[in-house]
Image (cartoon, rainbow, N blue to C red; front, side):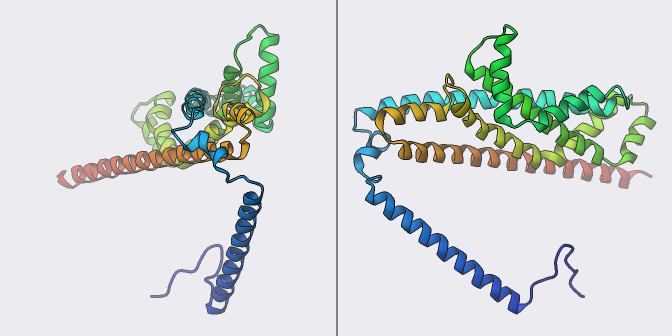
Length: 291
C-alpha cells in the first residue's frame, strides 16, 4: 500500500534530509558558541560571584529568608492576579461569544465593536488606559486591581473569539437535532454547542491562560505600585545589586508555573477525552441491544 502524500509538503529525500541534518548541526554549534561566549563574558564581569547568588541560594545568609519572603509574597500576588483575571476573562469572554452568536445582525454590532476595539489595543496600552481612566471616573483602587482589569479587558475578547470559533465548528446537524427534540436556542447553546466548543478549543484556551499568567509581569513595567513577582524582584535587585541573578530565579519560577499549568491542561484534556469515549461506547452499546 502506498504511503499517503503529505498535504503541505512532500516527504524529504535522502539528500534533503542530509542537508537538514547538516544545517541543524551548524545552527546548534553556533548557538553553543554564543552560549559559551556569554558565559565567559559574564564570568569576567563577576556575575557568577558567590556574594551575588548567596541571598537567593544560600540559606545561611542573613538576606536569604527576607528575600524569599518578599518573592513568596510577589508570587502569591501574581497567582492571585492571574486567577482573578483568568476567571473574569473566561466569564466575560463566554458571555461576549454567546451574545455575538445569539443577537441579530444589527443588534450585535455594539458587541462586535467592543471586541474589535479591545482586540486591537496592545495589552500594555490597555493596562495604562485602565490605570488612568478608572481614577477619573471615581474608581481609585490599587495597582494590582488595575492590572487585573487591564488583563481581563484584553484577554476576554481573545477568549470570546476562541469560543465563538469552537461553537461555529460544531456540526449544524447537532444543533438541528437539539431543536428537533424541543430544546430552545439557549438550551442548545448550553447543552450542545458550548461543551463541544470548550472541548475542541481547550488547547487554544489553555495557551491564552498561560499568556495571562506571563502578562502579569507587565505590571512591573507600566505600574509602580504593584506587588507581583517581577516588581518585587526588581525592588530586591535594586537593594542587593543582583538584577541578573534575580531575573534568572524568577524566570525559572515562571517556567515552572507554566509547565505545571500545561500539565494540568493535558490531564484535563485526557479526562474529557476519556469521558467522551465512555459516553460514545455506552451509546453504541445501547444501540446494539435494541431490537
